[in-house]
Amino acid sequence: MSDDFFAPPPFKPDEGLQRLQRELRGLGLTEREGRFERRGQPVARVALDGAALKAARVREPARSPQWIEKSIKDGAALRDFVAELKRELARWGDRDE
Image: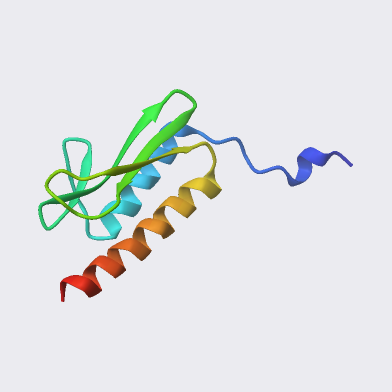
């Protein structure tokens, strides 16, 4: 039996970008000019970067945010990025209320 039997399917960056955009909109973010915003503040951005996705989230919501960049090359990294952003959105929401 080949080891490829248990290998995940190859990552398709264009499909991953569409999925990530859907997930971010599902978190209540608004897409504007390649960035995703919450209450008018940018919190994430994503773009194609060859065979990967170039994603970034802010350290803290601000008018001039500091971006934490990440290269997404597989489905697991995509899920991790969404989960991390979801945790941060919850933390920022708790602080704002």
